[in-house]
Length: 297
Image 1 (spheres, rainbow, N blue to C red):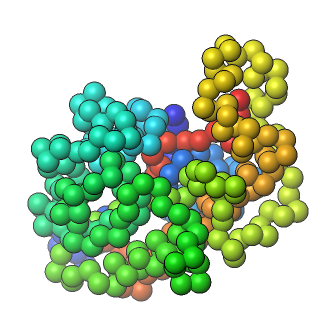
Image 2 (tube, rainbow, N blue to C red; image 1 turned 120 degrees about the vertical axis):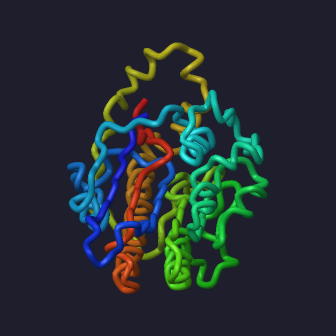
């Protein structure tokens, strides 16, 4: 499945010694399509901060995940290995200690990096090996919840993850390079909820006067032409609770609203990098675990 990858590399000047190691800000969005950005030509989505990042970055436009399912893809991202090698092929298998030892966070920590992780871990539920690796840990198992009354003012999870990222940037030691991995729950659905893509309250009215065009390949005749077992699969059931004619407009708008929330937090992070004098020595990587169908059948 096709994804987008943004890579921002700064040309280090004489202000930095030749041996200086850059900081790394790795931003992973869940279930993010490759085409839902202004810089990708989308006419409805609003992504001003990501558009600016793309303009200053190298954009990989022909990037694909090798195994387009959440946990397996995340294991490949952590390790740089195919599924056949890392052997994470379901939603329960944990990393072995040996496998985790070759993950990018562990290798960076061994190389002297100050490491942080925020958000959805996404490979098993125990997280024991992972937690030992990170100096700053705000990760969680499972899916998490966009809205939780236990949070002050029922703060949206995307906003909370932005706050946690700024906390990390305020507290990193001055004598070490750092790597912060931010794993957003957005724009993944809230499985089991009546409203499956609940946005930040600040964004509720966004796109209110917009009509979303029908998805490509959404013609019922295309669905009817599918082999019968495909018509009764889990994917088809989910289509009915997300993208039926009654639900399509608000579901897609909510997906776009969630992405706008991510965009806002990326903007805040970049401002914080400038504020703390780290912008010119930080590599930013922005990508997704895989893409997502928005009503296509």
